[in-house]
Length: 74
Length: 262
Image 1 (spheres, rainbow over the protein chains, first blue to last red):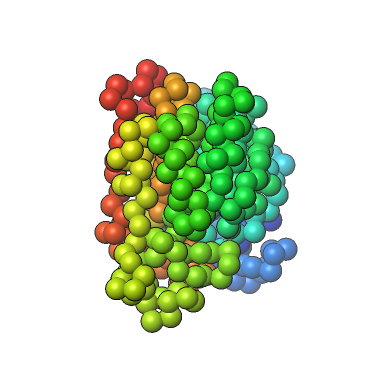
Image 2: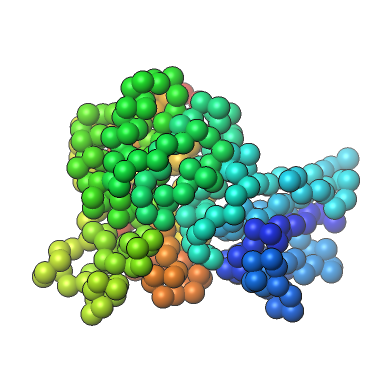
């Protein structure tokens, strides 16, 4: 795994601005569930572990809800 | 409220800034006020000046910014943030003092205060969030509203013959001798957001070097009052606002600052 992101769903307002900026299209709106605000939160859908931790989604997020992790070289 | 890494080999490279509180913001989904807040908080973190920064909040959607920044904050009367910041800075010359104002606040009722703060060359930093509309009060026409733009008080679109053309505050302030740093940036995509962050850093460095009045205008979206989805609102900034409010450096200090990022 090169990297990953975590969406803090308590902060997410479901604006979906993170979704088009992902170069690999790995983020989606979780239409099947709601967060405590009553909106469908964004979530990472990355079964093949393609996320590189490029930070684009975090830069586009107006709520600072996305934490980005990247693998450190051992 | 630290988010745990999912695997021990992964390290966080981007996380919630320390200079933001964990109070949920009242901003509408997709509003770029949140991005402006985050960028300012990140720069304060990177400069390590959270304990030495005093913000002055304005009236408008940004009125609650004192709840969201984890720095000292004061709340000014409508449009009077630069006047209050003048007093704060003169009484505390060793602190970094910034105002956070919208276009209804800064360009309309506060036009005199901002202009004369610049004329006096007050050593403060102003973050001017321009979304071309009055957001909090329900989407009325602002001085910065585009020609033809529909608002609740210009339902047929702004008519320049009776209400004038959009006011370009950065151009106005850049020709004032006391202004040291006046630039316009946008928040409509990742590249522009990165540029905006560099400008915010530079504007605070200008204040720290005592060079004079600094302002960063940030073109921002108002999805609710523009009646657009968040992504369409960003496209509106890019396609409609940027041609009227061209991005760029309107006034920068002559000498590049020592230690400033390129």
